[in-house]
Length: 215
Ligand code: G3P
Image (cartoon, rainbow, N blue to C red; front, side, top):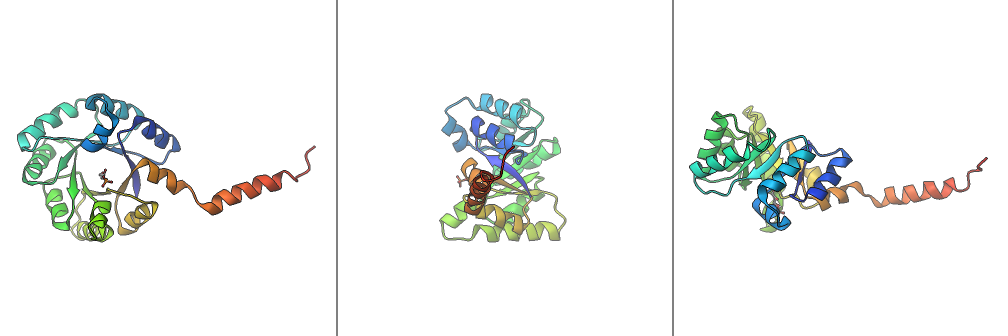
């Protein structure tokens, strides 16, 4: 399973990219709004940091509008992936974009049937939301497993991006469920590096090193 970072904060993207563990970025209108910067300017900067798929979301609610936005966004860089909300107009737009060779990420997926429809419309990626399902008492990881099973059974090559990841454990569960990618917020990514026994182990090695005779 590959890792993307789920943020529009370019400092965080730079730090995560320097770790060498991420190979793509996902953004959404809420993450862009949090940065208080121009959308196109942020997306352009992200393409200069990470050489991999960069999801930029459209905000039109009709297929024609989505397509118009997409045609402008893909001019920014060859790595741009158009993020489309799951809805009837979104499916139409994904289908049109797929025929034009534009890569798409159908987002806000909360059921396996939505994932299957998006895949059949030609989506390059689908983004099921784990944390938001957990928030309402459902089991987000079960959805990941269902989608992974269906896609494997029917040789569907649409890739599954586990989104709305909240904890390091979610990353492990997404990998076990067979997702292609997990898109991870910066703080969750940084938390995943740590383990108290690793910290203790490093401290002990350094302490013991002090007693090694030095010439
Ligand atoms: O990629 C979608 C993700 O950003 C949603 O996360 O934490 O707002 O549910 P969250």
